[in-house]
Length: 218
Image (cartoon, rainbow, N blue to C red; front, side):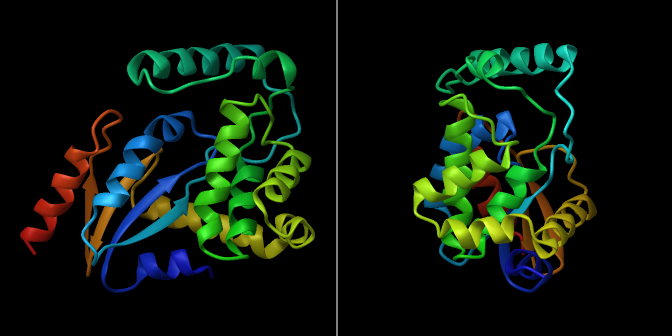
């Protein structure tokens, strides 16, 4: 079982971040998440868990779902004005309601070093939302991995492995056991206590203050 799952089940103080690399609200939250991580007390570890937004599917996305997701993008752009989207994706690609491949890509990247988890997530988001590329396609994910400096043959092998799929299912199960069904989500784990941390898409300080307040009462 991967280190992230072990740490979330272990001792110490962890900020657990549950996300999906193809979740548009996670993309909107990234700037504030970056600021939050830079501001956390030194004794807090960050545990990244993949929540798995949409399972594997080879079927093209229905038109109703396409329209719905485009409206979600527009809503985010209005709500979090700094968030950018390239709507060419909906004309240039054949969308599928399938985010598990991108989740597995993050795990495959992580196998080459924990620092690649965040780097691969960021690269997938940029490819999807800014470059109108389709991270539901394995070839796209392999190209992204090579571009950011991963060993692409190692990555390709891990991307399709049973171990990678099992790790993803473990992380999805753990996030659900934490009571998390929406992304992004933050939980602070201190010993055997779990506390939900608010997600604010425009100001990270509310999450930071919640973390500090939770620590102060233990």
